[in-house]
Image (cartoon, rainbow, N blue to C red; front, side):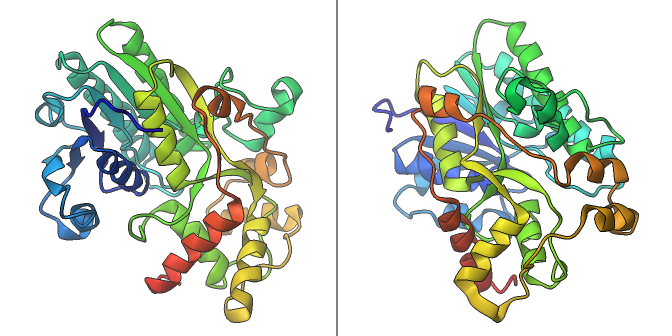
Length: 348
């Protein structure tokens, strides 16, 4: 899908894994992008964006912005018709969940949308939420009609003490809908992706997605993978979903963006089939009782283990196919291309 109306759009968190592919998509389709980052002069953070194409860099403008600083998005948003808010921390282990996860997610969303309220040109905001705002633990699916999550459900089981990342995404999205309902200038469309895999514009060595895949190859899981079921989606498909949510006039509400359900063991098996015996990929699942006993040593809560290990994870992606016209890459393609990129970058 390509918009014939070339617009000026803003992307927050531009140095991130998802945002990079989104900016590539936007520039490739002729739009001007105002990209916000913490430090526009940090070549390590923005070099891959500037290198997209020498012929389009004049349409890529970098701005400094801070999620926790009110008004810091105003300058970047001037003249923009559309805002993609992708910036939000994704870490499973933090010292202070309120400070490190919830505040940046919720206050950041509030600051970006407050800037939208002050920018008359903005007509639509696309928010990168997460399927974690729908499913806090895999066990939540058991309470949903037919055992399958849809856009109708909300995560009500996460908190600061249990699954704080999922809690932060839930609170941030609720704040967005609250602010959207309090005004009539712009409309809100939300993207709820599952676990993101696939090659980025660069290898984001500190991104949680890359960390999990690295653990499959570095021996940490050589005795077996936790029996953990997840949904997965290619980062390039996710970028396209954002694009369609931004430019299709009929796009509305929330959208689960997920290719299909998978598991850590299946992903490891796909990698082992492609890359052979060069890496100690896990070959079996560990018994749930072992994971439960060892959880505190791995920094996991036993509640998290009992509500996720061995539990089915199911989410309905049919709205994305029906309303956004999405089609999804095979998981094997996504995971093997991602790992090949990591090998080339010497991250494994």
